[in-house]
Amino acid sequence: MIYTVTFNPSLDYYVQVNNIKSGMVNRTTSERLAVGGKGLNVSLALKELGEDTLALGFIAGLTGDAIDEKVRRLGLPHDFIKVGGQSRINVKIKSNTETDINGSGAQISLNDINKLIRKLKTLLTQGDWLIVSGSVPAGLDENTYADLLKKLKSIKDINVVVDACGKLLTQTLKYKPFLIKPNIYEMCEIFGLSSIPDLEGIYACARKLQEDGARNVIVSMGSSGAVMVTETKQSMYVRAARGQLVNSVGAGDSMIAGFIHEYIKSGNYFSALNFATAAGSACAFTKNLATREQIEYIESLML
Image 1: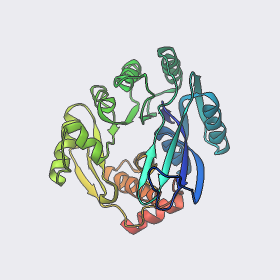
Image 2 (image 1 turned 90 degrees about the horizontal axis):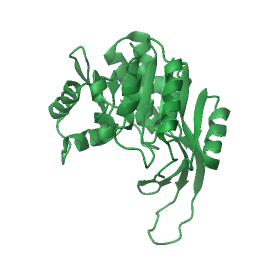
Image 3 (image 1 turned 180 degrees about the vertical axis):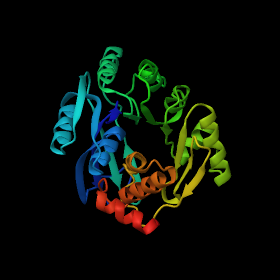
């Protein structure tokens, strides 16, 4: 079973505004509302690929009820914990550029997190996958994910995947996650780099993250593809498919889902990275998460 944890799910309000002008009244040309949050996106992509998945996390208030209802209508197995406050609404403005305005999220207490830990301890068994990804609401600190993994370390032989920014990610490395997936900008932030390094520099940074504890590292680079270093000492690069960017939201989450799906099937890192990159590209080329057929078509162009 593949479990995802989303501390900060959202309702994402997408609006198209032609030639948006700051400081003035602007009119939308289209709009839509979707559930968001990195872990939820991973679970939705895994479900599309035919994998058994359960989405866990926290919801709050009327927004949380709407998230729960939308997830239910999508047919995604889920088991959310209700907490205080209000789940966030993120505004995604599409105009000449993409602009995101993300809310801060619900109020999650230590008692709420302990409820999640108890739930996970009853669910997780040997060979399962646990994906912890995305931001945490205001009020939780950069040790949140590390503390979660610390309290789960007695559960042996589970595959942990972490996809987060900054210290929220790096603090988990001591618990030796199976996979981490910073994007190129997050990697540069971690190492204090003012510009994107060349390929050898990216490999060097990924290996340093391995030295700090990560077993496998993927660095996603958008239209430039993806780099991976593996615990079997392999270094690999896959080019992204060419196409028109429609929506970058969920592309990184689709990469994680694609990687896990293919790795479970083949046990081959390169095949998994190739399929992951196809999944990320396919998502970027459509306004929603990509279908399995779209991903497989993009993969066929990359072979």
